[in-house]
Length: 406
Image 1 (tube, helix red, strand yellow):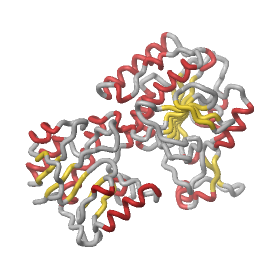
Image 2: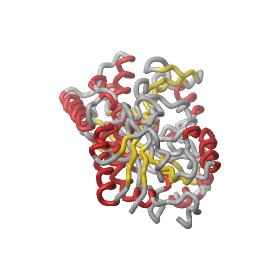
Image 3: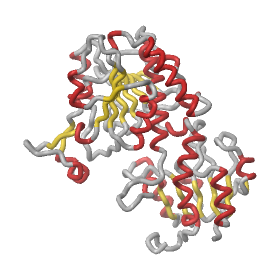
Image 4: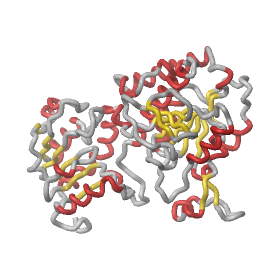
């Protein structure tokens, strides 16, 4: 098979070091499929230019001779080339207004766009994703920010010693540090006011499972949503507790007496309302990992937070790790995305004021929207394993033909 594949240099921000294809995958594509691979040079990529040269790729700024151009994040519309097949996360699937000009420009240039979010199986399940690594990094960062938030309130905990995900040399090193914190907490539990310490996870997909994978390293026990309200809060229970909240725990039918039906909820979310408020009051931390669009009910609204924080001087919920990071979305007080070097802000429900950092009245949130890039090598290796089987076929696409015909 012939064809030339380009790998674009990522330049959205300084933390974006991921690649769609690792050098090992490039070597296989060159040797087994006869593909030519051209890689734009980069000084920050997790895999250096020399590694790609050794794998048989050409390192060149010019990708104009490529049939298909692969990237991770969006290609700036002014850098798009005509009549190419592009493969990247376009962030247009939900009709995001800020990226409609990019989609329009692709159409003007007669390009074919293959969005990773739309590489799915016969049941519509995504096959190429970074979800698990978003969850892994998101949980590390949430626990790290939690330690800082508690310290700002005068409460020192082992979480304060946990660095952000991007500060570790590897995922294994980060996991080992989390295990060490778990050992310390078994020897000396959290202060009585934080016992039991309960973390809720919304959703049970790849993102949520990745986050749970990190939290489980601390040595935790899982309870059902029905058990939340009965957990003692007198300091006698020293456990770290996990609760996973799935769709049926988050919403209920509006119609009196109707039963929850998952497929109906997907097809007609307007027939459902959120029940999350009954659960969130029992949580110390929330990790939000659900897929959400404006058609679905919000989980945590500003109006609920305003009433809750006015009613209780110090509400139980300390932090939200909003890995989903839908701005003004399921967690309405996610009013902006943060970055790995400045991951947190505090939202004051009484005033709607947002303060960067971890200090001040209100609810602390971690809303970094590029979490997988904090684990660039591991995330890229996992992503490549899923993407590689499709690359040869993508390289053979003819943008001049209709996509269905291709």
